[in-house]
Length: 353
Ligand code: GAL
Image 1 (cartoon, rainbow, N blue to C red):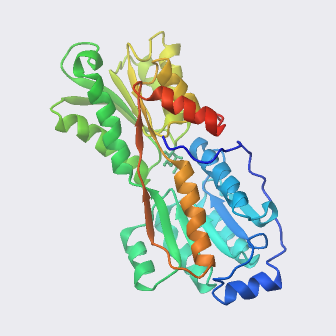
Image 2 (cartoon, rainbow, N blue to C red):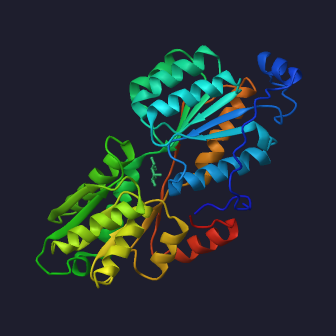
Image 3 (tube, rainbow, N blue to C red):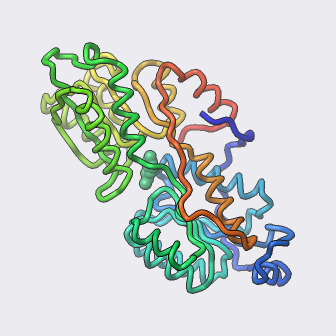
């Protein structure tokens, strides 16, 4: 896990200011602003698909902390939660552009609607950075072809799926195949329909096991909406029907924590009777790795991603060019490096949510 500047865990203050840049800053921005003197008057508009998503909360807090450290002012960081509703988000983007924001950072509800958001921002010459949910290749090509000030920052979800499969493989079939029938029976708890991360994590976790010669059987595959309680209910329902899996593969940690709870409630021991794996390395999930209940997770580097997103805005605001795609690597977290992960979480002051 990367060590970065100390982070005081802060809850983002949602500031809704109608006051735009000072005239001086505005004319600096208009002039390409290589000499932009201060960011304190520069307005950034942010939309997060759903504010109470555990991972996106960490991302958002770190984004605000980093923007403040770069000289942006709290009053000029405007954050909207889009209630997982694309129509709501589109009207928020319209409002933000109406309020004369100088740059946008958007976590789209539905990445296939990025085309519309891009058009709205570019028509007003406002730089735009997408985070976490990647628009299509066609859409990204449009940014390149038209030299739009538009960038995507995020990870390749295929890697996280492969890492989930590898974490399970490293435990070995002897351990995982609890009922000794030479078949790995699993539950798949998926994030959201038509979500790229969910699709790739689902596909690549299982194909990694199968490519290693393991016979798999899916006992249950349901959508948990990235949500802990939903995953707990899905798992409880499956266990109530006597569908006992060797493994529960969850597209994120929030859902893995729900699955752990359900396994415990059913009188089984997670990490002995059923093996559970997640993604994100949320602080609470890392504690469950330490105590053996979660067999592993994959760190989704919200620190690097939020900094890269802010830096991309800054480059555009300064009139500099910027890559249209900025990638980021995942990191496996297992019992082998859990102490390092716990130490990093403590040093960074990150709290669970
Ligand atoms: C994923 C993350 C999930 C959830 C999702 C939202 O990258 O692992 O926990 O936040 O994004 O799209």
